[in-house]
Amino acid sequence: MDTCTIRRTSVTLPALNEPGLYLSNVTSLEGGRGRMTEFHYADAGLRDLDLADTHLMDGRITGLKAQRTRLDKIRIDSVEFSGCDLGSLQWTDSKISRAVFRDCKLMGAMLTDVTLDSVLFENCRLDYSTFTQIRAAGPVIFSKCSLRETTFAAADLGAALIDDCDLRLTEFDGGKYRGLDLRGNDLSQLRGLASLKQIIIDHTQTLQLAEALAAELDVTYGEDLHE
Image 1: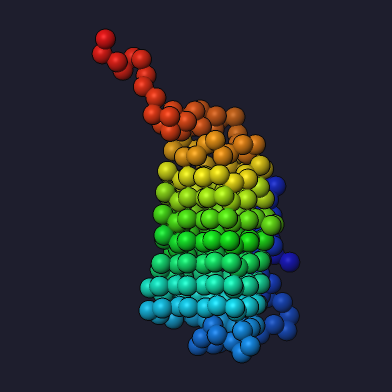
Image 2: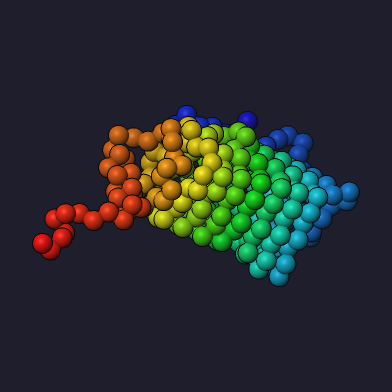
């Protein structure tokens, strides 16, 4: 069983190379009775992608481009997303398990009440996104992602790790982050530091947090005053 491990966090990856598993090419993600299994959905260009009450299991979604994306009450199990561009993404009331998002653009995405369990975001663009009431029920890794001006609001990310990501003006607005591993990032422009109690950092990042706090408090340095 393949895994992605960074420091002490390990994500179990989709099991798509198992003997006897054959992925059939499909032209839609709308399966019979709300279920799609053992599938490959590739290179679709859509104006609108609307899915609700659907279970996607054991599949690959590659090169999907949608101008507007609405996902509601979706269950994801053992699915790999690669090279996808999901514009105006709104994803609500769903669970994502053993999934990978690799080289995807999810700019300005809005995820609300979504549970993540063994999920890897790798080399993804998530700038200007809002993650509201996101819960890491199992390990979650953000690796080499851009999270500029992204907001985590009332999230529970104690089982998550963020590594080598762009966190410029990334904001944490309430929530639970005890155990969140933020080593390997520049933290000097974070926002919402009061929410980040009991996170994991390196000693060398302490000064970065001090810099972020000074900016957040809008302090004035005495030596800059003209007396």
